[in-house]
Length: 227
Image 1 (tube, rainbow, N blue to C red):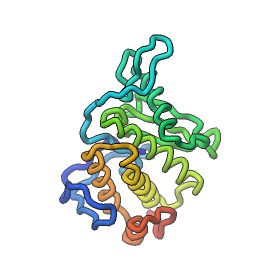
Image 2 (cartoon, rainbow, N blue to C red):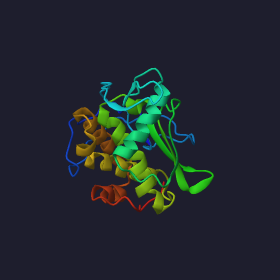
Image 3 (cartoon, rainbow, N blue to C red):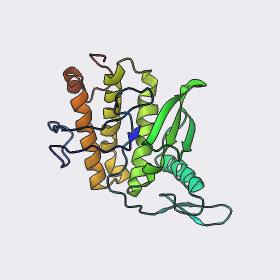
Image 4 (cartoon, rainbow, N blue to C red):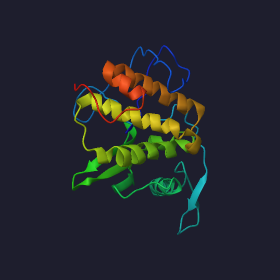
């Protein structure tokens, strides 16, 4: 999932290369996850620079009115549902493991969320929230990639997390890192790229040293220590 909560003050704010030394984070997001534990990085980011740019991704079959990617229009919920479906098609994503793919206006704490379907553990329920529509046109694409391509298609076949919060941190690190690799495809704004880099920095601070070494060389499939 991509978190809506933003990081507070940091020592370094400028974007850095993926292989650079992590920034030192002075303070990280606080809060509770669904289990009531201390916040772990399991959420998609909200865009740091909402611009609400519009571009047409389709037309309402009944009225012929244009449907914009940011959900603008008389029927926001319908438009945004159409937008996420069209985005997945435009990206040519494999949706075979997704049983539910919906816009959920109640999803306020994160931009996106992927969970195993309780009725079919081989598939996932993916929900996209309002903040996925608050950034550049590429922000929605990046959010959908984060949830579907990484959490569902790449991480899903590996099975469940067996490393506690360390495992959750590592999975989110992989998803954010993948977003950056796809930045030229999605066209996310420079400030949005910087926000993802800062989120990576914050995750690395919370990782045990052996797990940090693993993710910095692209190994997110296993961990050395549970917590």
